[in-house]
Amino acid sequence: MIGALPNPKKTITIDFPISKLKETIGFIPLTKDKAYKFTSKNEVFNLYTFEATEFLSLGVYIDISLSEVSENKTTIEIEVRRKIGAFDKSHEITSANIHISKIIELISLCVSLTDEKIESLKKSTTTEQVHLNGFKSKEDNTQNYNCGVCKKEFYANIDKSKVWNCPHCNTSNLLQKQVSTTTLAVYALASLVMLGLFLLLLKYI
Image (cartoon, rainbow, N blue to C red; front, side):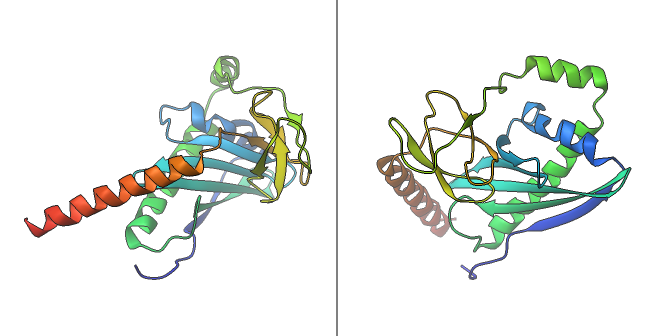
């Protein structure tokens, strides 16, 4: 434990128009690396969020921000943040930097796709759904969620659609079934047991 650490970030500039990035960045979950899932996007501010799970952790969010430099240049800022809490161990920072490197590779792969491949991916994806508008207050059969961009709470019914627009900032959010408190407690207990066994094993090495 070394105290709370800032979220790892990296900024790069590539020789592609921002329109090409916006068109292809959503294909990251469809590449051969299935580790990353789309969470939310805000096309007005060019913000895209993906998520990844990790061993003995609830995982991380990867925020990608696009800024136009010129007609054929775009700046990409990538930030990794924990789903719960903050980074406080050196190995977590190392893992986050690995995510950044992988995301850069996947962006490079996606932006280089041919028009034919893009059309093929658009037809093959099953993630395209009707985007419904979320509610600011609780309605019948809805649950509370937090927007991946503005972080504000809204209500939605995941049984009707997995994709809902945040009523506060109009960001599209891909919702997931919420994990119960009991499940989280069991997961945390299992993690502690595995950690204890690992530390015990180290004593005999």
